[in-house]
Length: 143
Image (cartoon, rainbow, N blue to C red; front, side, top):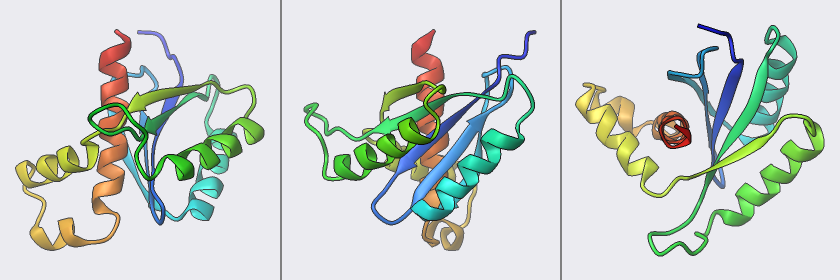
């Protein structure tokens, strides 16, 4: 198999942001963590700089729409972060993935996986899992 480089998946929220990435074959997403926006910017810059070639080859941004396709309340936060990504990394493409229901799905995955109620209740525990789910959806839909 050929090394394709990694994709970074992002679940942008008003207070916290989840971050995940794929393996270098772009087959399996893994959770990196949950960060404030400032921490997230720093973490992304570190990952882009330190990742060996071909490196980070794309961002998958969770696109916040409701079930009827209209933008959700968090769209403004996502568009602001999208602007930062475009300005900071103009040569890395941004892909979009509908994130509707990803937080609920993340909670279900955590319950099924045996994550304790205490751990699930921690702020941000769901956000990083949601980022991995957004990334998994993208991988499945791109074919």
